[in-house]
Image (cartoon, rainbow, N blue to C red; front, side, top):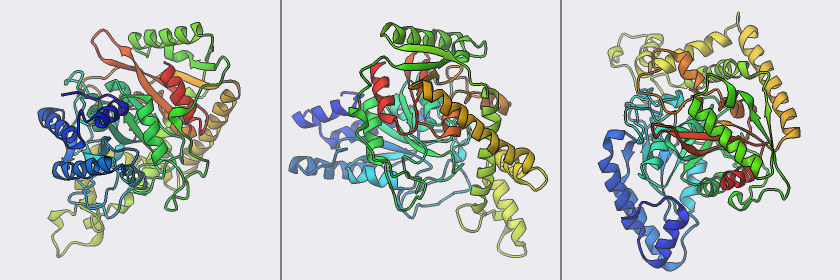
Length: 474
Ligand code: GLN
């Protein structure tokens, strides 16, 4: 039994008849069965995946198969897939079944991808450790006492543990890149508006991006290529042409790479990560590139800006879950005698977990009449300043490099009592979301305990091809 780590190796073996899609799916199902303790999947589509595999095998034999024939993926539990449950890791969507398929997912299906199941995540994608899921935490396969990161924790561990070849997650402040870093895999957050959000359960709409997780830059590139591009159901999607990201080449000149000084000097960053980042910097310099330290003067405002704006947007987006239209309705309200407001209150209090309630309250506060200007308006202004500073930076540099996270995967329960500590784990990832730029996290060795370390590269809007090219280079 071969544990495939790249789509090209799967394709090679399919071609020679070394394996069939049916056998491939069977292998993944066995592995999923053997790793239940990791709590990666909230539902496995076993029979359906087998059937699909049979269908794709026939298409391969007939020479009519799509570009993703043989690719077995999982999808994060925030992506709609018609006639399949979708819960956003929440109790409030109990028994909810998607009525339609997310555009990004449909485009993959149209190319004959096989979806093996739905992956555990933090409730409504709010979290950095996958401990906020109504389905229980996911465990890191490198050390099961540790978190996989979040919110796409199940999606990252699925790739790490070889339970599927790739996953589709979502990234609002780091949710694809941070778990990818914690699990030693590749995670790509595209430019805001590169991939349609139609069918993605909204957390913070002006930040949310669908992004792939896989073992190689080539595989995330291929998935992005297929998902990206205009969609009549999402007017925020860009009409910029989609190129063959995995074919992109770096310019024939030394690159200009900025790196965050804090990422290699700050005491707040784990020493093993500082050293690993420094090694990459040295390697790039040795290859003849210009690599220079920079400071983001607004660094300390990144997280406050992110948390004010995303909670504000979340409080609005999540108002639709009222116990009437979707999923969970408080039973204690019964059918008689309870007024509507009580029904809403009870259903929402019982249906949402603690972190989601905290964020709805925070966001409602930030948007309330007396505080709107002090918080929401101010945060919007700071967002613009951060964007301007980032634009200026990229007038001088092709890439911004930093660690993906300040520490490797921490222990389960280590940060659950202290939201601020938890939020700080996103210090390096949120900038890309605040400004809407693409960024990729790739493995960068391990620490002394064998825990994966990630490094992040950020590029200007729509430069995903260069990101992938440099990632391959590294
Ligand atoms: N960890 C961040 C948060 O809790 C990012 C989440 C995400 O990207 N969905 O908001």
